[in-house]
Image (cartoon, rainbow over all chains, first blue to last red; front, side, top):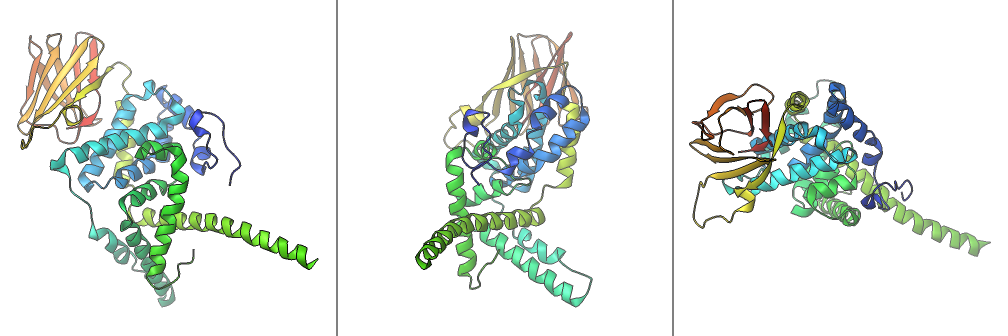
Amino acid sequence: MRTGTVPSAAYDDVPYTRGGTVERTEVGALVRSAADGDAAAWKAIVEGLGPLVWSVVRAHRLSDADAHEVYQTVWFRFAQNLGRIREPDKAGAWLSSTARNECLKVHRNARRLMLTDDPQLLDRVSEDGAPEQSLLEAEEAAAQSERVRRLWQEFEELGERCRQLLRVLIASPPPSYQEVSAALGIAVGSIGPLRQRCLRRLRARLESRGTTWTT
Amino acid sequence: MDDVNGTDDLDGTDGEAVFDGDVEAGLLEEELRQAAAVLDPLPPGLLQIAVDAYALHDLDARVAELTFDSLVDAIPVRGATDTPRMLTFSAGEVTVDVEVTAQGLMGQLLPPRPASIEVLGGPQAGAPLTADDMGRFTADTPPSGPFALRLRTGRDVVVTEWLRA
């Protein structure tokens, strides 16, 4: 767990770095290629980091319409500034902090503020999870849907700080702590302990509902 | 032997307990990640919009950076609702002041000069406007969603930083 630290920049010097950094070592090269006119490189950046931007936006509890517009604004601005990004290797952090700033602007603009409690979200699994195969599979699928639904519900009801942190952390592929820091404005060093704490709290909530939650 | 084994077991268990905590946290996080992929995924339409946004990488234009935004830099007037959004963009000696209200958009290009302007809403061509000799321009409808202004004066092209109205 504590091996594989990449001593590249001052704040990369964290004992616990995650997969995201490794999988994204090529981001810098991709950004430079895209800036030079390589559309395939651009597409790879979007596919690699789009889910992270979406997670950051979702972590900030915007209405769907606001979330969509912020997401677009972030990518439009990134495209516009492609040749001027000072540290291409940290494009993920650039995108994350741009998304955060735009989300905070939405919150400031109180007229637009609308919480997404989004009850439909919670129903979506049960709607989608209509299996057509055997009864056994159907039952398994139903049980799995129920599990996912419960997990998500408990996650949504976590305290705001934990919900926000975890929503960014569960981007796919997992973000680096540097990106999480940029997304939420919290120190890199506090992310690990906060993560542990929030996941512990989530597990406790799940288990307080009667059954043990085995992962 | 027993003692040694006992100690070993104890150490082993301790080590494992810590390790298990990490592993369990990791597993729970991973399960949550999969739940997010099912319940709150990045909409495919948005992915495509971001792919298409590559067209906005414009080598010919200078980017005018946002240097003032009333949403961030101004103290709101108490009780005032629907106050205009005031924005200032700068690129070198060029300044663009923009005011967005529910009624539309007003702008001032400085130093004053005529310009042909496009109100961009994405990679597609935008609505055309013209700045008069005093550098003033207006639009009857406010931009909805992300927007940028592309201003052309002679051979000089300036695009304002993308943001949401």
